[in-house]
Length: 38
Image (spheres, rainbow, N blue to C red):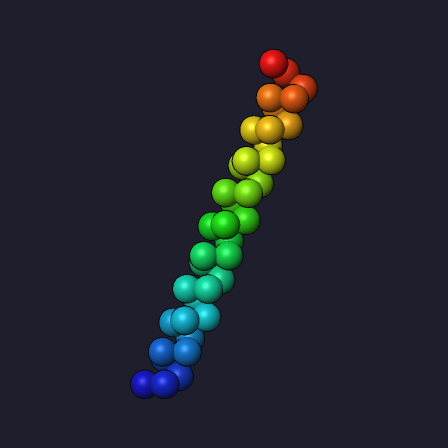
């Protein structure tokens, strides 16, 4: 029970971190496009 719970928390943390990283990279990409293009 504890083990599966810990693993679940770890996977959730990793998922949230990866989602945040994707969001930040998209924001940076858009800002770069805005600066260079328009």
